Structure formats: structure tokens, C-alpha cells
Length: 392
Image (cartoon, rainbow, N blue to C red; front, side):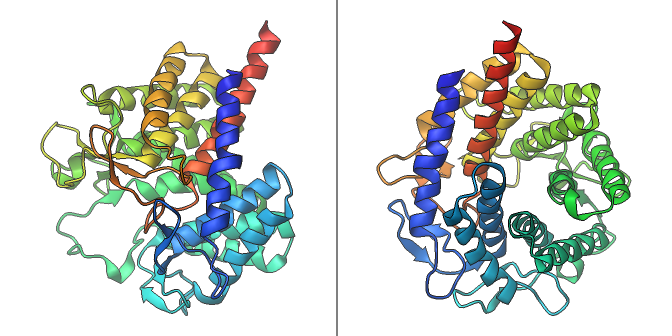
């Protein structure tokens, strides 16, 4: 147990964080570069709001929860200043991407830009106690709630009314976001949102026939026999399960935790590649061909999120299957993703585990899933060790 805890701690503090602090900070225009090569060189200077917000959140969270290092707060503040200056459209929503200098590139069609901005400023407020950050986080959060039924607004490609579907990603994120900024919201708002999110994730998107979480359902919560309706995103489903476990812990609801653990195991059993190992990126609930040509790739975030869920499942329930799967996923993950010559992890692997892209960061991969996962895993392993020590 201690060897795993030490490994995750060391990887976070001595490999992952130093890589981003060394290569990502744009000293000239502010914010962070995220398109980084294997060696840490910047290969594109566009700035993506998701990843700007995630970087601010990551270093603010570590400052708040791990150690108040000034260098971490300075790094978070650097990204927040850029976001605050350039990130919002006139109506208060957040763009998807900007030029290096901060000029808008892509309209605020993507509600997850708002979600990660909310996380960022919610954590930064905890670190600085600056009221402007609390107000920014709150205002953005309430804007998200207003847009829940139509998150893309007039930028949606779908023809209205033909095959309306709602997507799993937003209720999943809101499970986590509700706890992230709980300190800024009235208790009744938080409680109502938590209950709604739990119902959406565990009931509406749950397909009883397969025992799996669907990525899209009809507005009434029904199955749609279409490409989108049959789609499974195992990483999304498993990531959501550790969010649900955290909510179950907060609510002291052991049955909710048990159900989330069972869903984690069910999803992993379905999505594990028996031939090459690792977890498939996309699948079809009826085992039909999927639209996504990258369906069999092995992605960094899917594997690290699965490790978190398995460890939390083991912590809360003691189910040995969680620990057995943890060791299996851990071994495959650490064999294929880390790259220790220059630091950080590869993000995109082929089905058999070879790097497809040698980049360490890009449009979607930034300083978030891996450091968050290492931190969560390290701290959960410590709790497991302490619990087992006490029991002995």
C-alpha cells in the first residue's frame, strides 16, 4: 500500500507539476501554453479556456489542500489574470479558445468552458479571499444552470426537434462542480442540485438492460436506437462514479456508494480490452460499429480516472475486486503512459499501447486529469493504509 502511495506522490510532485511549471507559463502575454511536445516545446500558441481554467484550478487546489506554496498560488494567479482579462464574451459566457494574445477564436458554444472557469475562480477565491473571484464563480455557475436545457444555444449543429437528445457530460460535471463551489452557494441550492445530478447520472442515463451508463438519451430519459443513443464512453461513466462516491460520502449514503462501485466494476468489465489490455475509448451498447474512428485508442484520462474510482470503491466498501482491478489497471497504465526522459505522460496510445502522438499537451490535454488523478489516488491510498492499520 505504501509503495503505491509513495509512487503517486512522487510522480505528482517531482514529474508532472515541474513539467507544467517549466514549460507552460506564457511570460509575455499571460495564461498557459498547453500544446507542448514530448520535450516540452510549444508547438501551437492558441489558448483553450478549458485548459486555462483547469490549470488555475489545479494549482489553487493544491495550494488550498496540500501546501500553501507561493509558487503554486503565483502560477494560478498568472492564469486567472489572463482568463479574467480575455476569457468572457459580452454576455458573461466563456469563449472556447483564444489567440496567444487573448483575441477570441471560437465562440462560447461550449458550456464546459464555463464549468472550468467556475471551478478555477471558486478555488482561487478560497486561496485569496478576493470577493471578485467569488462573484465571478457564482455568476458563471448560475449562468450554467440557466443553460442546462440548451447548453450549446444557437451554435448547435443539430436540427431542432428531429432527434432531440441530452448528453451525459453536463450532469456528470455538475456532480463535481456542486461540491467544488459549495462554499459560495446557499445550502438549499447545493442540496437541490446534488439530488438532481444523482438522479440524472444514476437513473436517467442508466440503462437497466445492459447495466451501463449511456452517453445520450432522449429528453424523456429513454433509449434512442441510433449511433448517439447506443454510444458508451467508459471513461465518462467511471469518472462520474467517483464523483457519485464523493457525494455519497457527503450524504452518508452507503447504498449510493455501493451502487457507484458496482457500476464502476460493471463498466470496466465491459470496456477492458482482453486482447491488448487497457480501456476502450468508445463502445456501442449493442456491440455495433461506432462512428468514432478513435474508438479503440487508449487515453490518459480514461485510465487515471478509473484508478481513482477503483481506489475510492475499495476505500468505502472493502470490495477486493476493486483492489484486484486497481492493480491490473495501475500496471497497464504505468507501463504505457509515463515518459520519464522529458517528463509528463503520453496522452494518446494505439490499441496495443504504443504512442500515437508523442505530445504531452494539446487542445484537450493539459495540467488536469493526471495531476488531479495522482493527488486523488495518493490521498485515497493514504486513507486506505490508515484504515487498515487501525483495523489491525
